[in-house]
Length: 73
Image (cartoon, rainbow, N blue to C red; front, side, top):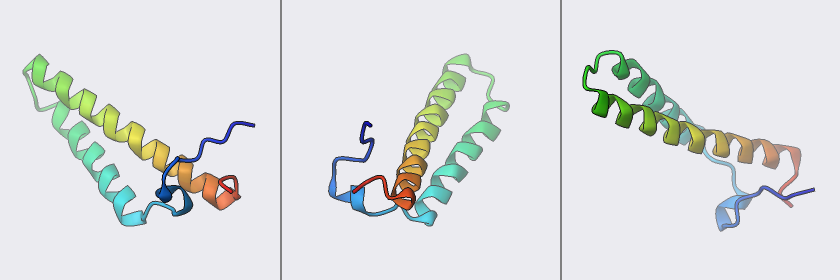
């Protein structure tokens, strides 16, 4: 089985709820803004930003889940 734990000292600690909440709020704010933007170039940057933050958020949530399951030992 492949170990998907982060290869840093952070690997032993869960991400804090405040950090995860902040990143979630950022993604939601970007998504709410996209509909108000008419410039396709700006809209593309917003979509890319939301995707990047969302991907990082998902990795952190998966990391926390692995810690809870005891898979990072």
